[in-house]
Image (cartoon, rainbow, N blue to C red; front, side, top):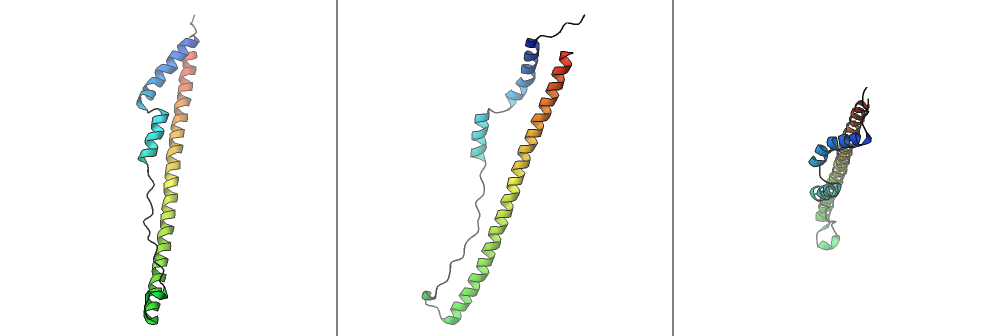
Length: 122
C-alpha cells in the first residue's frame, strides 16, 4: 500500500523548490527600481549645423562656399541621425530578446516543477 501525499506535502515541496530561486532574485519592486536607475539610453551626439545667413557680412562668393559647407554638414547630420535611429532599433531588439529569453526560462522552470510535482503525486 502506497500512502498518498497530502496537499500540504505538495505545498511544502513547492515552497522548498521555490525558496532557493526566491532567495537569489530581487523583489519585483526592487528589480524595477534597479532596472530603471541603472539603464540609460545614450543620447544622440549628432550636431545640427548652423544655418548660414546673408546678414553675416560675407561676400556672395564666400556665402556660396558657406552654403556648400552647410549642405555637406546637413547631409552628415542626417546620416548621423539615421545611424542613431538604427542603433536604437538594435538596442530595442536586444532588450526584447533578453526579456523573451527570461520568459522562456521561467516557463521551462514551471514546466519542470509541474513534472516534479506530478511525479511526487504518483
